Image (cartoon, rainbow, N blue to C red; front, side):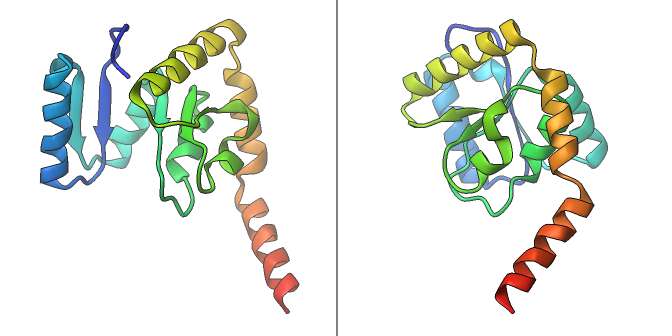
Length: 152
């Protein structure tokens, strides 16, 4: 993801030390170690700061119950790059960019094409509006109630 650009990759959240080291070894191998930051768990304040100041949000998760980080990133109008698996396409809808293949070169191309599209179309306000419309506590409660009623 860091080839052919000067972005930094910030990985936040609780991470196994062995996996953290694997990430850094790969970053070293590709000559981008100085641009990969594995920062661990962060406060809500820090998370808010990162959402406000990031250029893009990448979440290529393969096992997700519900992607709250995706909703939070989209709430800030950020270009959001997601796995096309689990519930993520339902959350991101047509306003997110999707990794259909996890080959690094293909992911790099998806990222570059998505960033070019985002810069050309500037959909931040549309992303924010969609997120505010779809992801409210009222909508969540109604969906829960609808599901419950369908079962009984």
